[in-house]
Image 1 (cartoon, rainbow, N blue to C red):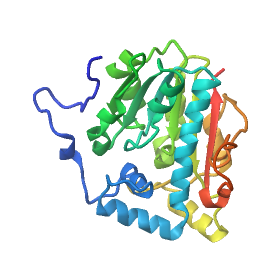
Image 2: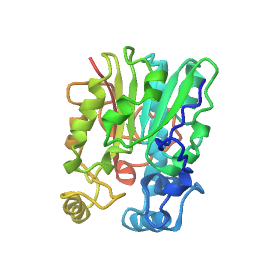
Image 3: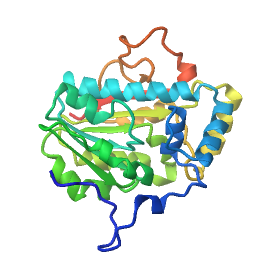
Image 4: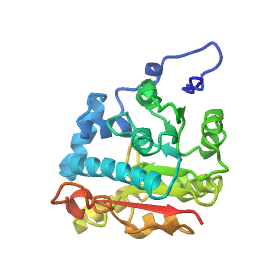
Length: 284
């Protein structure tokens, strides 16, 4: 398969991904990597991560549970729903059991397109392109806020057949899109391009389980958007709106720690410790 990694650089420029890395500003993918115990982060990411952990001490538990939700959702979609195509936006820095590894362990012919806007993820993209011979993977350097670039990118069109069902994975990414950036419109646009029988799998940080004073401070802080890398916490009802018009599969909109987690180690973290919703739904 032709190498699908792209930097969208002008012909002849060929900049290295590291040329775009600003180590002085925290980035969500690198901060998440820090919480998961990874090494691909900088002091700004660690400082930001520690500051958030001071306000929400179980943030690392939340990050781990979110990752496990992703893996269970992919396994369900590949095994029970029979999905063979995945569009994973907000991929993050590669770690164990990435989307293509989980899907292709069940269905070797599964095809996966990853999308992220962090140059460190781009630098690690080849780890995301080690596909089973029967399947395929591709990586696109793009932002969720630009759905047209994603949907019309030649590497997506080469890898996925948009005439067949696709699982759109928006795991722990939507809370980085502020209201002014029309997150609901972005999701509708992406789903509009996918055929019936496609799925949306998503997770989202919430203030519902936070103490009242902390929740109110979070609502005020996110009312008019955030600085880059900030998190827009939303309620269960706000999160459920992303699934309007879709058929939500059991167990519905629940904590990521509870979503089809019967085989996970017990006891499970509480909803307060995780403070993040997850759900999977089918496009009729």
